Image (tube, rainbow, N blue to C red; front, side, top):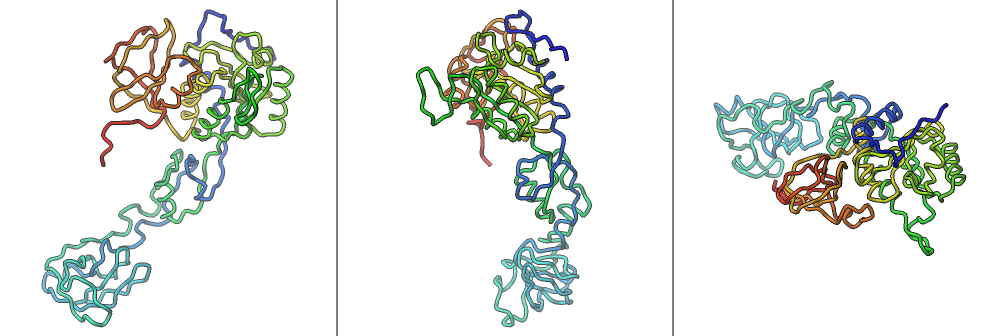
Length: 422
């Protein structure tokens, strides 16, 4: 196959963000098909692959909403004194209601057939339950309404009704509904499998001893956590030296041994003298492009050994911003990601400058309706990334923003401030 010509960073043409996102979508579309059956306990944060229809109704039977007495409401129009019947505890079958009786029921207990209302114990006289056999009658208020304090069968969901739709993300509430319906397992979208490879002679795993000029590798941790958070399994996390043979050997070994759906690398894709990823893959059909964004301009996209390949820059912030702006939205659109990012407007607390012609993303703290930039634009500033919960969009042709200007922000963490009252 003839290698596809890449657009190098030295080329004056820049790919717009939207075009690169579309290229990633086309590259990855259809790559993450497949489903798997999971026990309910393993379904958290998975995407449901098929509809679940209710196998039973909820509630499954008429039951009491309160501790009290079950009665036939029509009888309370003519009498206030009722014979106390045998109590019905929760979890036990209920006998038929006998005329003229009031049946002690606990919350959740099945209503006797023929009873259609519950009188709370505090409205009865006496207003507390007495030991079985010690109270023969109880006085109740008159004119009780039918359905009072009764949870009707099927009032939540009826049998065969759609309970959970395909594509829905299974959180605690959705899993709880499935459990209440007696569903023991779910058919979920398979999580994509990823090889994550960081490159560079200078990077070593955290905890290792650093030699002169070396730094700890943050990229595999940052991107690995981001991918896992988004719903992607990171099967292999590797560091490759700045050697084409070593880099290719690592790739080949993983592709041969592990069934991966996507390869993601960081570093080695710019125009420097030791850009190992570019040197190894530029002649193998991978395109190296410059996207109109800062940080995160250099990008790589293509296939290696038939597997979709995505290359991010080596600076940790650039790699993280690349994932958030370019790859995460594609994973969401393709039904892979289980966590979306949301954009909103906010008021800038201080002025900002942006380079001409670039779409800049600045780390920031969003608090209520205001957003405060953190650190500078440098792609090495990890503390600012750690403290931030948002990215400020500064699209071209904007080169200057003033205090009080309204900007668009992408929320990347938990928003602070605002009204969180219940």
